[in-house]
Length: 138
Image (tube, rainbow, N blue to C red; front, side, top):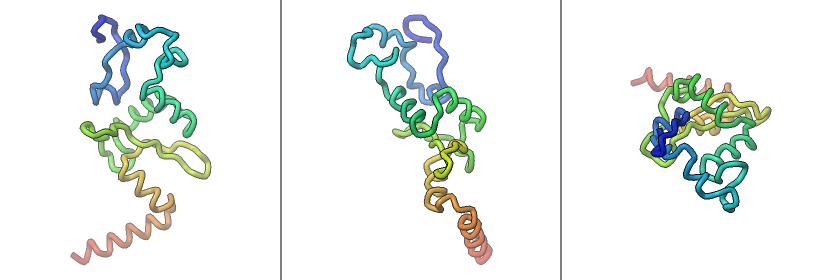
């Protein structure tokens, strides 16, 4: 609930981080003629992020939140929750670089691992065999 008394629906990530401060009434006070006001809301980090998601992955906040909810707020691979105390609090949007199709939400570590392995399942299987071989040698 906002300080002005208005109830607001907040996204899953905002509930975790507690970064929601207003129902939007603070933005309305700035006025529509403010240079920061764009498309009915101010140009905030959330606005920029949604624009980035739309341009690069073809999804909006609502779709991101649905995916996050379906994954129980965790990485699709390792099931880790996004860090709550660091600068970055969101999971990465994983997508196929050939088709552009979104696959799921990943933590930084898993996202980078797939990228470094060039999304190559053969290479990933060889890495598993390598780790298994040396894990048994211990």
